[in-house]
Length: 214
Image 1 (tube, helix red, strand yellow):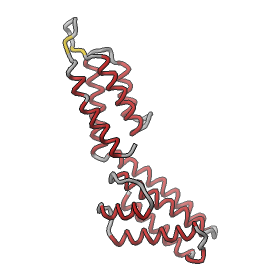
Image 2: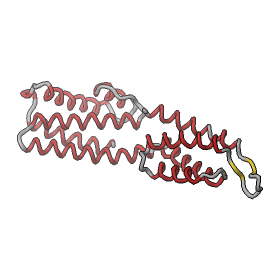
Image 3: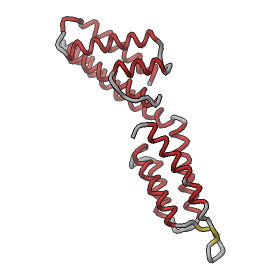
Image 4: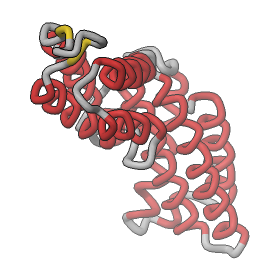
């Protein structure tokens, strides 16, 4: 799911809390409030599907919600716990915290890729080094598009969209275009169009770009 679909689904499930709340009534024993099980379980299953897709099956959010959901016996206490976990997950997603975590992971992965590119360059393999660095650049742009709720596309389009969104300025947009040209030359066998030093500067520049923006 893309970010807009996820956001819309979060809003739908938040609105459906009202449907569950409307079923709250005093238990027949009179010592606690209870919730209609079918309404709660339908909402809860939808929430778990969303949480597992957004945060992961083993995430804290999904694990806690699932635990309270499985403990639900019709009384309001476990429903309140489930609702609290959902609301916390909703706030994390809507405030961009999930992307902050993803950004940290993405930065680590890109650093691994750039280190591989450096190793290739040091071994006199500038052409695959350039391609690997280009992959790191494109992956980073996709990560930034996710953060800004922009659609993925060709590198040039993502570059233009991110500049338009104010993520970086025109100068950086032009620099990214220059890096993409190097990558394209490498991918199409135009190996005499660039040098080892060009690739070295490309790797250094992309690393700096990632450290600032991801």
